[in-house]
Length: 264
Length: 302
Image (cartoon, rainbow over all chains, first blue to last red; front, side, top):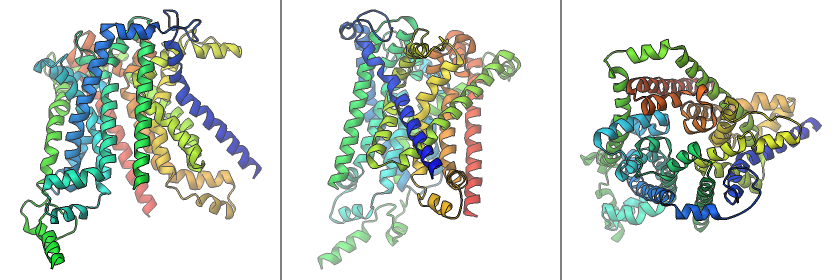
C-alpha cells in the first residue's frame, strides 16, 4: 500500500505542475502590458499604462479590433443559423448521402490551416474578395461550422420529439413549434455553438493572413505582424485584453449553463 | 372527446420524419427528405469556401506552371524538401509523445479527484483551450527569449543559458503547451467512463497496484489515448503560427514552406503540391486510426 500512496503523491505533484504549466505562461502577458519601457523584457522594471493608451489611440490597432469584432459577430450569426439548420437536417433527414454530408460538415476541423489558406487565397483572388469583410466572414464561417454543428446535433439527439408532436397537435405551425418548443430546449447547444463560432473567428490567424489587405486586417493578423516586425509592448496590451475578454466569456457561459441546468 | 381529437391530430399531423414509426410517415411522400433541405445552405457554403479552395490547391499542384507531375517530382527529389517533411514528422511525434506523457496522469487525476478539485483542473485545461492561439504563441515568444523568464529561472539554479527561441526545442515546448487541452479532454472523456471498481477488483484477485493499472486500466483508456494522439498529431503536422514565430527559418516545417512558396515566391504549383502531400498525410493518419480503432473494438466485443 505504501508504494501506491507514493504514487499518488507523485501524481498530484505532477498534476499541480502540469496545471501551472497550462495557465501560467499565458499570464506573463498581463504584467508585461503594464511595463514602463518600450521593450518586451520580463519582468518589467517600471510600470505605466501607456501601452493601453497607445492601443486605443492608434488607428491601426483600433480598426483591427473593430474589424475582428464585426467579422466575429457576423460569423456567429451566419454560422449559428447555417449550423442549426444543418444539425436539424442531419438528425432528422432520412436520405442517402447523409453520412457524406456529415463528414463534409466536420472536415474543416482536420484540414491543415495553411492548405485551406492557400486555396481560399486563390479563390478570393478570382472573386476579388481579398481584403473584404464578406470574404473574412465566409472564410471564417466554414471553419466555425463544425464547432456549431457538433454541440447542436448533440442537444438535438437528446431532445424528445414527442414535444413537437404535442405542440403541433395544439395547432402550432412548423416554424412556431421550432421557435417556441424546439429552440428553447436545445438552447444550451445553440449557445455553445454560437460561442465556439465567435471564438473561432476571433482567433483565426492563418487563413486571415492570406486574405487580409493593408486596409482590412483582423486583430490576430495585426498582432502577428507586430510580433514579427517590432518589439512594441502595445501587442501585450492587446493580448491582455483578449485574455480578459475570452476568460469573461467562458466564465459567463459556464455560469449560464450551470444556472440553466439547476433551474431544470 | 377532446382527447380523441388530440390523438387524432397527433397521428394526422404527418410531421415529416417523426421518430416513432407511425403510419403517418409512410403515408407522407416527403418522408425524411424535407429535413434534408435544411442541410443545403451549409453544404453550399462549404462547397464554395471549403471544397472549391481545396480542389483549386490540387488543381494548381498538377497544372501550374505546366500540366503534369512536375511539382511532385520536384518535391520528392529535393533533399531539402524531404528533410522538411521528416522534421515536420519528428516534431509532431515529439509533441504528441510529450503531451501524452503529461496529460495521462493529469486526466487520471481528474477522474479520482473530488468535484471541487476536478472543477479546478478542468478550468485549468479550458482556459488555455479558449485563449487565442496568437496570444499564447506571443507569450511563448517572450518566455523563450535568450534573456526570457525560462532562462532566468534556469540561470537561478545554475543552468543555461540555452538558446530556446528559434530552435526546434522551443517549437516543441510551445506546441505541447498549446495542444495539451486536445489530449487531456478526450483522455478524460474516456477515463471518466471506466468503472472505478475494476482496479480494486483486480487487486483483490492478487494483482499489484501497478500490474492492475497496466493490465486493466490502461487498455480500457486506449480509445482516449488514440483520439487524443491523433488530434494532437494532425494539428501539429499542420501548425503554422507557432513554428513560424518560435522556430528558426532554416529549420522550417512544411506549413512554413507552403506559406513561403505561395506568399513569398508565388509558386502556386509547388505550394499546392506540398499542400496535397500534407493533406494526404493527415488523411492517411486518420484512416490508420479508424482502422486500428475498429480492430480494437472488435477485440473488445469478442
